[in-house]
Image 1 (cartoon, rainbow, N blue to C red):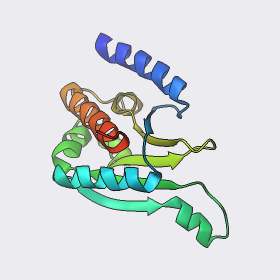
Image 2: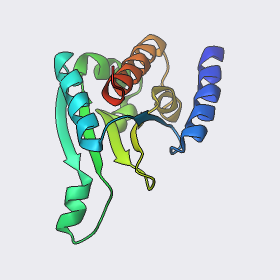
Image 3: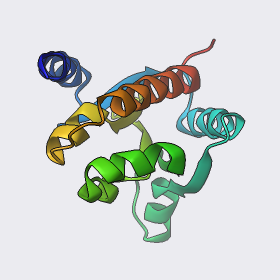
Image 4: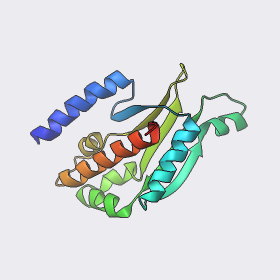
Length: 151
């Protein structure tokens, strides 16, 4: 429990410095929104994960006669990971499957943002899923890094 609290404190410091909303982790991307989302989708497919949807919010805004900076949401998951979380806390299902928001800010910087699994654990009072949460956090961090950098 002490490790979880320490992780949350450190994460909240990182989140504040990244300018993200509460409970979100944001990573700078070296690519455009579309390229970052394409890279993420390829990574997810290579890992055998399911990509449920990819939503282009800027295209939706354009259809409504509005302007929006490039913004895409990728919804993805794996029942082998999500199910144990829901067994620990059924209401966590409102935040599953996982989502990655890839967006461009007012300066043109592209960001890869996702829900912090530790924040979700607190939000849903998840008990007994520490190992699963660690794996999810590591996987999401790796996906963000690989999709956002030029490695």
